[in-house]
Amino acid sequence: MMTTAAPALDQARADAFLSTVLEHTSATTTTVLAAIGDRLGLFADLAEHGPATPAELAGRAAIDPRYAREWLSALASAGYLEYAPEDGRYALPPEHVAVLAEERGPHFFGGVHQMLVGMVKPIDLLVEAFRSGGGVPQSAYDEDIWAGMDRFTASWFDHLLLQAWIPGMPRVRALLEAGAEVADVGCGRGRALIRLAQAFPRSRFVGFDVFAPSVERARAFAAEAGVADRVRFEVHDGAAGLPGRYDVITTFDVVHDAVDPRGLLRAIRRAVREDGVYVCLDVNCSHRVEENAGPLGSLLYGFSILYCMTTSLAGAGEGLGTCGFSETVVRDLCAAAGFRGVRLVPLENPFNNLYEITP
Image (cartoon, rainbow, N blue to C red; front, side):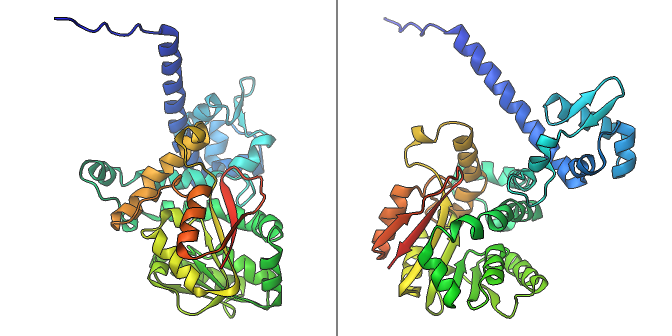
């Protein structure tokens, strides 16, 4: 009886992979500790008040000194903080402030860290979905994912929506300036519509979302911003059809999550006026796995398993996933829904593509 010889082991490759796994595992613990520091305001304290010993940070932030020392040591080891052994103080370098302490800044990651912590909380349900199929419903996630997602995407709407996205679509800007009827499908907590309402007072806006708690929060935010007279929010499943006709319809990172993306696109096509525009922001990815290689691609696939794909599958949906709505798929599904034109708006954005889609 002949046996097949085991392939020769490339020891250098094995050692390199071991180092990679150690790096990734360490990064996971660092992300969790960064999320704790964000929640407790530790990065913000160091940014505002300067370097501190563990005892000083504990006093300033009202935390236990022993935990302060361990947290500071861990984040210094990871390179997030700097440690000065001569005086025992830890500092947040000024170059790190924008990423770790500048709430709603263009590079702030605190929301991402909070969102990731929220994504892993229903892990037992996710493991069961691996075994039996189906998914994890939105109701299984807690406030961390919703608040984190809101904080993460707020930077888009504060720094990109009016500064880059709308200027890149002159037709859309003209409609908004003249006074358009606008619908945002999958509006979440309403940040995009609130920003648009503040910038384009002649237009009227409605946001639709299937998740009632987000709609309630969106209404409160609109009232706080003083635009509730021109912005309303409703609990509604866009794939079931949209009430009314609109000059501009928007979806911001929604279609790849949808239970029924094809039905959603058909509903949007029926609801957008013939001289209107559908604005679709979605993930910058490829339909080829090999083209999504690297840290960003693995992060996107991770988002997909932890939330995007699994919440769609929980509703017996298509489960496109985070990398399932690439430009190729966008063009195919929009054509099938009855749209005639899809324009990829020129952007330099590693996370998202922006499409201007016409009936």
